[in-house]
Image (tube, rainbow, N blue to C red; front, top):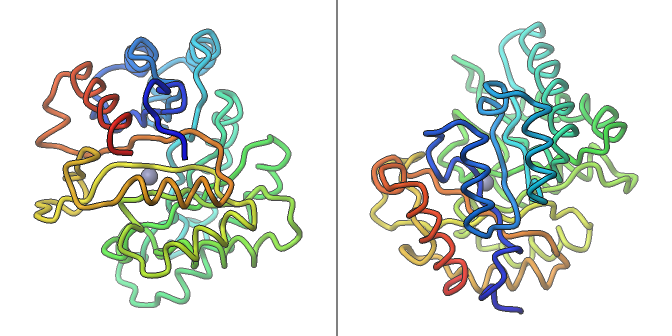
Length: 283
Ligand code: ZN
């Protein structure tokens, strides 16, 4: 495995890492100026900006868009709400195509309010994803299912392991057109006893579309907003990148850190500098 030292062009910054404190155009400029080769923006940022201008800026800076975040949750109480979610995701696919995103990240949603029916929520997710595949294929935007840590099964994602995400891919798209794949985020899957087998299976199916890094802090104080900087937690990041790259992944390494108290209160350029340091030393 090649070191990332001197290879920030192989690294990307998910804009959530900077806490969404500035307009997207400013954030993109900072990321490019710091030497990173990629960026992964969020929908609410793009909605607040001019889509064509942002697309032009990204092209001019020659940044790779490693992902566009993220889907509207699929499961819902009523059919009308589920349809609205699909339509919302269709609109996002067009934006993703416009900015040349390598994938649209699917965070699929948890249980509908008041529901205890996990199997039905998972069926609704499968239906929702299936409804996007043709349009995604037409636009040339790949769909990356991001399994989330099981602590989010109730409210954010009923897909919780890479293996499970692959089963959705295989069921919805068995023919190998490969619109559907997975985003592997170490924060969500580092604990998985099947990690190495699952990564290998994802690679063999040519379905690894993105790779996200941060770190797991053993004394985490917030389920959502206390991710660690790479190297500050307990995850063997080099080992996992090795698994992902041995499985055939050749894309960028994307940093995605939600950190309300620590990194979102640090000056953006300083946070980027720390990302650069850690990418080159512990990832
Ligand atoms: Zn992620």
